Length: 467
Image (cartoon, rainbow, N blue to C red; front, top):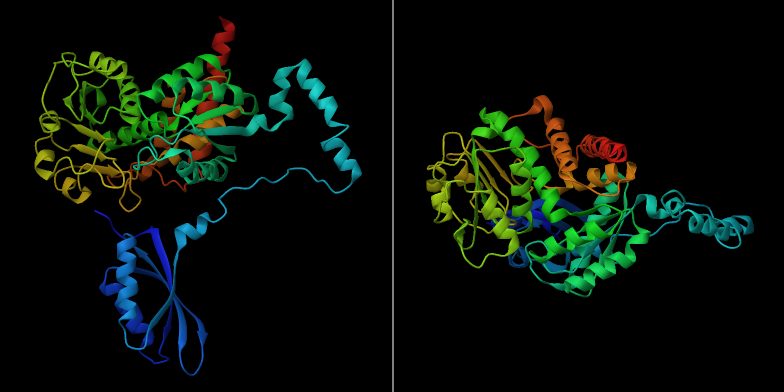
């Protein structure tokens, strides 16, 4: 279900005849093959020809070729060059390191480096906690991956994962002024990943695990949380769960249902699905039915890993068996973090009145949103070209801002739920079926999440100290 979007934006430079109809001919040619024109710039002109840059959103690399072929087919038109604007954005990477202090003369150098820096080193050696106050540690997060589950691309390795981790770090800075840095590890061995992150931890005030495949990611996160004195947060799990819980709270307000009376179907029991289920259970739904590639998860199934076994023991109260289609019948809510095109409008019609459908598989959801809308009261996806985008950017920048500001040493479910409530509250009186979560560019989101997480973390610290 690919549609033209900025992720496949191209600029085509063409020579064209200097005729009055040239602009219309060029734009019509782009439109006829389904391109979405976003800019038309004449960059050169003489008596013989004009030089035009045509920028358009396309659906794929093949679609880009269709557009250039259509332009080349026009009389007197010649395509000079095609630029992929996404690749241009990534040339040389998306991050840089900039000093925060002036280094203009010998005095500056003496304080920032030798001999003055030695005194700061000695202070930290005497009181290691001063590293949070006197170094970049106070505001720095490691974005750690092994490249084993990158976006929907699968196991593409650490080098290929780096553009995603760079983007993640840029989002940390943009939305919460957190200094994050990619750490792409050339190993997929659980023990080596844990050992390496432990060795790197002194530089950072938080660890954001990213795109590490299940079930390995569960053990890595759990053991690092035990061994480190800084928060460890696997965004594929908890960032997704936070935003899903925020969206669900508001969606149920739209349809005027209480979660205690709702049966929720979760498709996909990997990193994201498992975390959603664990957080969802804290809200006491009537029941949760988990479904994976082998069907409904239940205690009678064989060969389940520890994560699936835990899910089976805490969901599906009636021991339902069967397929996703069976699970949907009579359900109030569907949450999909699995695979594309798993069901259609006819299955949504079997759900309870005013169902809520979150089809979050990317780039192609579990059901075409237009089909889902035939029967669902509220529909959300992970895509930016439909209403109600469930996007982790609503969560992780503010979560880490709050953790860093609280000097938190760990993170728990109460902080995650506080973050979810903060995201949901930003919507406020703007709530409707097409607006259940705020825009990722809403400047109120990250500060609200940060404050909620900070307050919860400070309270938790105080309670621990009181004990």
